[in-house]
Each structure stands twice: as C-alpha cells, then as structure tokens.
Length: 98
Image (tube, rainbow, N blue to C red; front, side, top):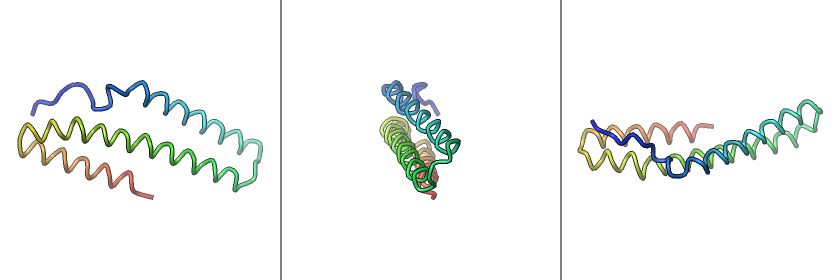
C-alpha cells in the first residue's frame, strides 16, 4: 500500500497547534484553580470547556483524515479502503467514549 507522506491535517497544522496551545493554557488555568481551592463547580465548568475544546480538535482531525487519508486509500483499492474505513470507525468510537 502506498500512502502519501503528508497527513490530512498538514495544510491546517498551524491552526491545530494554535488550538492545542490554547487548550494547554486552559489546563494550566485549571491547575491554578485547584491550587487556589476554587469552588468545585467552577473547576468542573472549566474542565467541561477544555473537554469540548479537545473534542473540537479531534473532530477537525477526523474530518481531515477522512477527507485526505481515507479518500486516498479508497481510491487505491478495496483492501486499502476497507482498512482505512475500519480505522476511522475505531477512531470515532474512541472519540465518543465518555
């Protein structure tokens, strides 16, 4: 199987990194909230925000993967396409776990 070396998110890599750095800052903020013994509900609200932000990045990467990697594999043939489709279904299951 021959796959392109570039990942599906390559054209948006800088945007993905910006979003992940923003999330990293949110997580550091969570640490400060706990260190300062902030009210539990406020910490939980911020955890929810971080979780949603990470899910947003995950969905974007999934979209890029389907649009690039899966499409390319499907065009190469049945076995390659089937393998990538199963891979993406597994990734979706992982993202949907709570």
